[in-house]
Figure (cartoon, rainbow, N blue to C red):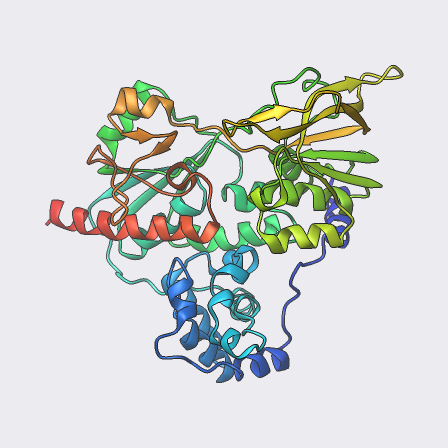
Length: 446
């Protein structure tokens, strides 16, 4: 794509996906910061998985010390800019604000955090090194998502060498490829990673790490290995017609418009699943111009894994929901090779708790695009059998206090450990592991 076409595509993308939470201007930020009670035992800090000192960074905004505010945030969370946009603050920091006790509007912590971080990047994004000399010890990270980035940044600031291996062409994991554009732009994710790269973190892209030989070599070359491999491909529906043109899983759909310039969408879109990724895909389809978007879920509204506020936003944007509905086939158009409809059946919970199809309840929904969003598979099958890294239920088992696996040379964090939680949880995993690795490296090379 030429530079002109790229700029046009980016402009169109920005127009279709305005910020979900627009930034404060300077006056509004100071006004909001001055509402804060600066609680000594701040429940907002306790609710944050990375334990950002929220009262401290907000007070610095009130004092017009935006760099100091940003450094307070970054000391706890190196991806503070991304998290200010994508964190579910309603159920974390803002959900714990003491103003709720008085039936008052909680402090808009997420937007204040963004205000400080935007100013930090606007003014050069220079991080403070915790240790100035290069120290003995090197660590490999597999995957360039938030957990690996957090670990790498912490270790580099302490003087250790870190190399991140990533099989895709860009770093950031789901921050770059999989988070809806109205929450976090890829350009903002990459800007943040450039700050980490400037610390001296090495990146190797297009690196497929798998198999005994590759891991054996890593074990020889590096003191420790951090597994931030995320989750695998989206689960398939396992129904007839899912390989038809017009059927694309939610992550590929989001990646397509975020980084691939694919801004086209079907006129009538059906999304299967009711998690946060499904909601993101449905809302994106609306913004890309779909005339109708429907979500199918095989259970009821209280059973969905999406946050309630995400669900409410989707309804406000015109997304329709079908509960107790299971797809059984995707039907091909007689006029072209694509999708014409999706065939469904109503289901109910049987006596043993499993779902049962309701006889005679079959129906069709006309559509020309189907987006499955029913979770991701694990990428860790080889680890347990070949490397001695213990896994449980498709996740890597770690000591939660340290991030260390059953193999003393391996640490892990993020989705491959927690099954797919929030960016801030992955950052917390990475930093927690980094502190342990740093101590081990200091002792090893003392």
